[in-house]
Image (cartoon, rainbow over all chains, first blue to last red; front, side, top):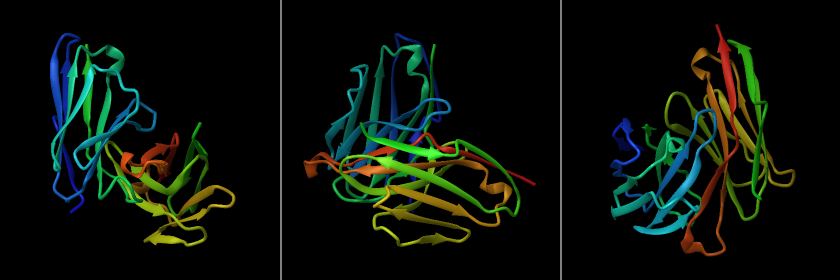
Length: 114
Length: 116
């Protein structure tokens, strides 16, 4: 089973709202990732969690706040977003972040900020 | 700056044709090169290549890496309409500090359309 699940599938939020994106995997992977993908562009890395600790933050604005409550779950808390933050947000996981393992992606959350 | 460049950007072929997609890279701390297929949503994993010259094969798809010339190709033989997708090449970069984790840098993708 190589499944990564994400909820919700779609989200529309205003600029003053607070919302959260959720990601879950049950493959025993110890590394989890958030990516942002704009239309017709490749995914861009936002955050890496390794063994439930934030190990890479790609200079993401503080209005995006990741959280890893346990090894199977990854959240992305959103607050005071801008319309340009509208994108597909992809979660991925891999067996380990420090070695060469393939990353498996979830279906994504399509976010629209109005 | 780490760069991953794919070509062509888009390609239209007929069913049954063979296609070759290219990926070249200029990066520091190369670990592996990965190929993904993206249709409507999530990229799905195809291959991971770490060693030069060893072909990986899955059905009609195959891929090989040349670490001296810094490129990889993805071949699809006897194409079908279901192969229509964006094919993403990504390079896994290692960190000087192992505990910081690896980073996947994507190319812009090749849009493949297979006509029946």
